[in-house]
Image (cartoon, rainbow, N blue to C red; front, side, top):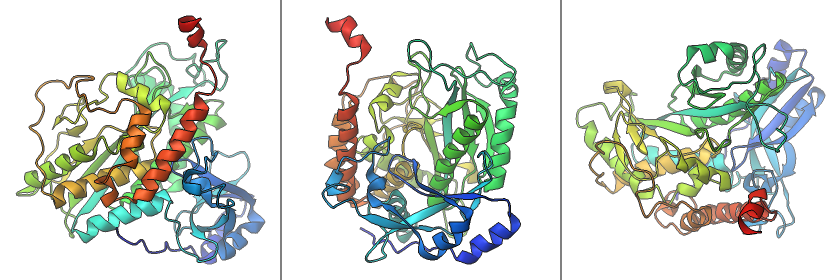
Length: 455
């Protein structure tokens, strides 16, 4: 296992320069990114920002392994058995920017957290885990280029009479009533929201490159440009989710990245595009002899897919997404075919890449990308051979090994020796323990439908 070096910490000079250019800033949100892909931290008055940069910010280190609500389950003895110690969050260089959707002028900065006593990065920080996998890839001569696509729904902040969520009413328009896949009219109806998203992304330096109306009623997808730093690509995905939710809230709506918010509508995915380049930045998949390398990468993804599945589908609702159309439930791959897990989009040469279509929009981008790159490395290191590309449409539920149960998937993740060659085995076990705790608390209360079935 590669030993990760300590992340760099931003200088206080970065804050002084920023504040001089943005004197109206009243507060700063300082946060880390947890195992659910959520941000955890504190909002400080701008007057304390210099102290944040000079000394760091103390809060619970176990936040990295909390559940989707930010609550801990003492997974691996982190949070209760160890006395829930604080770590020290320190700002990362180049991540300070405005948060344009907030009610008062606010800045934000992404942090890494170090151990209070030794000043070392925490081994259970998802950014550290992804950074380790990237270092392993580069040590093997592999240089990944990554881009993320995220789907989401705009919903009304008020629940329906039955307690369920409903699509949002856009400014000047009633709530959507029909699917409008790829409809420019639907994009135009949401133009004020999408304009604000683009403006906020520009202010934050996020490489947003387009938006489309998706299959679901009130569902959209925002794309991010590819970058040669996979850690940055995962950061972009988390920051885009925070931005989309913030802009929606400022407009009287909510945005949800639930994997399956409506049973009658398509789920929302996190699709990851990945290619490999040489040291000069030339696409190796599209070069002479690149097809063999591409097939090895696909073979690695096939080999580690089910071991990694609990990272791609991390909760009870995540599993529901795999009941829908164009959501893979097998290890198949093909060119220009959205029914498979690993799609080769149209494009040759520098555009040649793999689209990994398995993860839900509720998955951690950092852990998702880490698992994908681990699989790429696994396939190339062992020179694995991919199956023949699928002809036709992938069948739903056709693979008996598909881990279509959360607990089964978590057990498989925790016990995976192959995945533990690249991601720390103790983290896989802690993650599985935390998600089991979340699930057990989730099912503590009866579902209304149980009365219809069992009374």
